[in-house]
Image 1 (tube, rainbow, N blue to C red):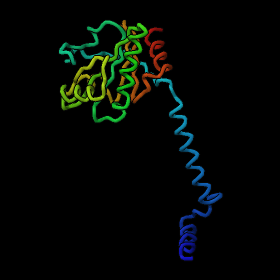
Image 2: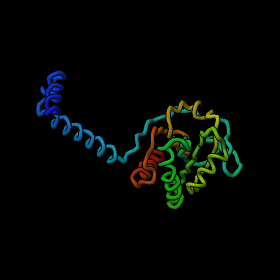
Image 3: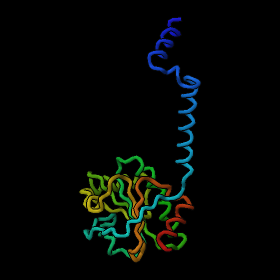
Image 4: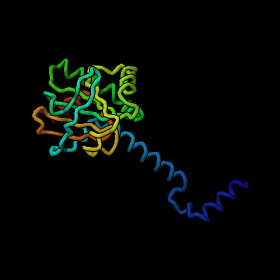
Length: 195
């Protein structure tokens, strides 16, 4: 009885009783909106490609896992350059997909290399140990703990990934995670870089 009186008072005071169908209408509407957003977000497999053809990449070289230096200018062939960090949950989630995409491109004899650029401030050893624990291989692992490349490119969030054609004429930016090992996504990458 007290509950009903308090709820009635609340309805009168807030005007909540004036909503069509009351509380049930509101709950059903919120649930419907959440389901619509949830299903459309996960149904999308297309990459949100943002043309970045005027991008000028840093000339600074970065140390790699095998002790060599990596730069985009010195690399032959097309590239997928992914900026990531171990503290970034979406980055960590997509790392296995990036490695799988790299293996799939190699197996199909498609000249696209995947370069993972770590911006972890803890440096080379921390980032490489993290990749090793995840079993991430078949990629170029480079380290930029000072984030000089990310700052020079204006990277605003992680993960951020650049698709770069072999002739460097076509450059696209993808901000946020993607399903890199999905066949439709890999086909879209090939079409974007080679068309």
